Length: 57
Image (tube, rainbow, N blue to C red):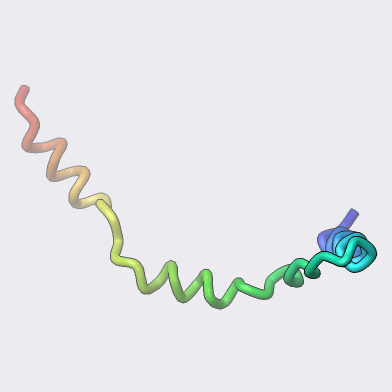
C-alpha cells in the first residue's frame, strides 16, 4: 500500500468517525527543513575530535 492510499484510507476513517482528517503526506516538509536549517549545529566533528584529543591518557 502506498503512502497516498494509506492517507486516503485514514481520511475516510476519520470522516466516518467525525474526527479531523490527518494532514496530507508532505504537508509539513518545508517547515521541517526550515527548522532543521535554523537550528544551530550541536557538537560536530571538530568538537568531538577536540574532546578526544584533550582527554587524559
